[in-house]
Amino acid sequence: MITRNSFIGASATLPSPDALEKSVVVVLRRPPLSSEAATEALRVAVGQTLAPQRVTLCLIDDGVWTVGPLNPSVVRAPEIKKHLDALLTLGHRVVVEKEAAEARGLDDLASGIELTPRTECFAWLTEADAVIAY
Image (cartoon, rainbow, N blue to C red; front, side):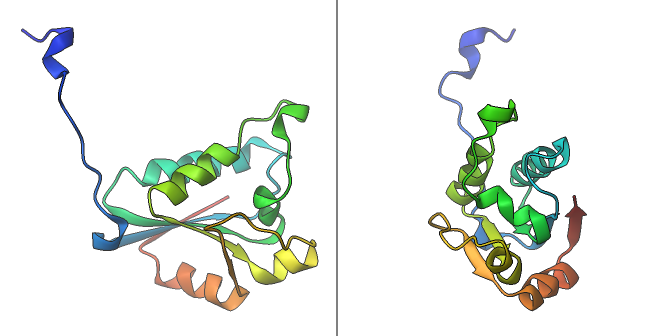
């Protein structure tokens, strides 16, 4: 019989992203507050970290606004920062297309977020084992 106290002391260990073989790139091209697609992309990216794979969240085009100065609560949108923080804390990558960020005047990125040229972003897409686009 399993009781509530049966699981006390149980623990789980997530594999290190460096030891993983498969790679997943989640691409977000849409602005973060215009639809639920951006929020879903962030949820999917975090969810992918539960499997044994490397996850990269690649923000291109208007998706770069996801790391911009936002206040989602003003428009009653879901929280964005917690998903970005979770990915970075777990050792996965959040990359921003350099050309798109520059075109939108985004130059002050949070610690851990990588500014990457468009050609490098596209190279990750072709080399990834799976690409999930939003």
